[in-house]
Length: 456
Image (cartoon, rainbow, N blue to C red; front, top):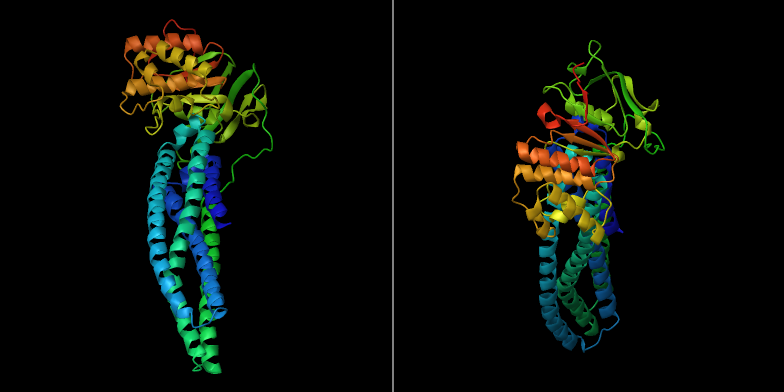
């Protein structure tokens, strides 16, 4: 039961982290606090859960030892005690080796979980952009289930070790009492005291179980209170994104909750723009004019201060918009512990098949990444900034999202490579709504893009 709680705690935290609003993230969450929460509170829960199992099994072993020897008192107990000692030495050697091996494996699993948690903390915004919530949760769940199984095995290994280590002292103690009784030296008071000592010692250990259960509850409450599930907008059902329609920003004003005095768009400068699904939009504006904020509002990460964002005159937040947009951020993500294929398919629900392999190879070839095609199942840790950026664009191309947002896709590319990327986009993103954010108008020159200026 406690091991199920152990695994469920990790999954609960991951789901809650992926569900909180950006307002809450900005106001109450820092990487340091989150890492402490992730590693400390959950570690406490898992520790006390394992300790509870150990206490219960140790108590049962004491009761079993007590019952066995009290039912078997005879002169042969001396020979029995010698046999117990020999078995104790052999069994203790065996269980100690098993426990040590399990501990080493648990340490490796914890390191893997630490890497996952650090990836999440350091790349939260980009992971939301790339729709990596489900993929990250799947990765966490795989590691957590393995950790849960291993924690169970390690708990039982530790319990076996404790059982063996306490078996001989208890056996000898009860043997001594039995010898006194068999030689007629026992008294009723002495018997009662010895029985009372053993029984109270066993029952007293059970108090640790109840204390650990309370600590488990306390740890879960800390996790539950640390990350709140409340979001600014709650609706029971979201509409599927239509294949056509007009998306409008109407008299939108906005300021970040942590900086309310610094308005991105205010009463003297409201955001008004419109475009149709299927259009190719280029947003050009200097730094600090709200290009990144525009993406976050489009994806519904924040509610607007005033005005509204609609699609076919329906509030945009009524649609499953976050699941319908694939964003290629300027700061791209590449998970070094994953293969190239896993990185490219991470944000999609596609499985690695012959068809997807052919699709990936075609995309990589169009993007000038031919050298990587032969190593899809290898690790590509040493990648240049331009290669990482093109791999992020490849993720968008293989994604099923109908809307693709590219934030400064040419920032790490030379002119020739940028033109190569544009030609690949013309081929693989022809049926999608493309929103291109750039300060380099040469990048979209002679291309069929509708130019929007956020300064207006």
